[in-house]
Length: 440
Image (cartoon, rainbow, N blue to C red; front, side, top):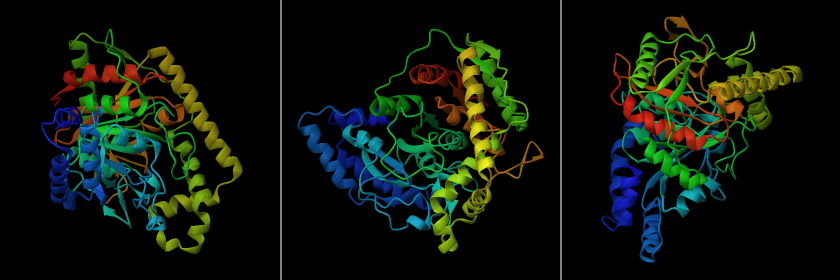
């Protein structure tokens, strides 16, 4: 059931929160071993269901009444072990709820548990020495992406209808695309962030709802922010298959994107070609030193004392951060600033920009990144070529399902709008959902 339908059924007394909790725990315990989507089950889940039942009996109107949710393993949930996927935090117990978790609980949601993420939410596949490999429910040989891999795997597998992830470079847009669901990155600071862990890169990460359709995203956003979708008077998109980056796309991804734009035109929408004027000789990798330097700032002393506790992939990033000069970090800050100015100028010109969410479908579950895209060698962030720009610009972006490739693997369509245009972006995505349904 969708979160909307489930909350309605519970609110109308057709099913009790306790019955929901019993059914969901059974489903989760049956499905999770194959996926490794949930790294901790909440021992108070049934008690939370009892509390929701008491509130409903007292006459409260709860928009998420009895809806089970998962919270990513880098967002605080009071009294639960929250590790950031790292052995360094293996025994950390969150002292309080993050504000977003509080808002969900106030609305009647019940926390089933904590979803797996990559260490410090800093890589695009979900596996770590602490929690092992998380797998894609579409094909267990493949990754669901990262860092919100556990959240999307659980939602796509039907364990929960709604989850909270985070997104500092696409971590709640690319993974939904890899499993065929929806993830939304709101405008920076629209959803309350924290209290919680310090971020490696300040002022780019946001808390994100993840669901199977836009209706549940809209419900979550109303609870988290008070913002509701605004229906568009027309559908108008500025399309850019490679977002001006020069990144190669798998042929199926390009074919799928072009077919999606044809569908929109056939439905009466307007498509224009977007020209993104990125500064010469800049690329998405120019901002990576910010993450490396942030990791070094936060964890250098622990790394020097206990390097064996770190994921080798994160150790590589941290070591790179320790070797950076001040000038190199400043250059990365300038690259992020140019990224923001360029994207905001393009959005002011076009309104909403559409790109593929990723240039490729999911890859092997135990690999950090695809080795090739469209037959060309990649770097570890080639698969993320189209998403971090929205983070550095602070603007809303989302990914909705956009059919499959020739092997049946899910693909996503990314929509990006100007800062504060979350309501309009959600409304447009809701209008596009039926148009793109069953796209080949």
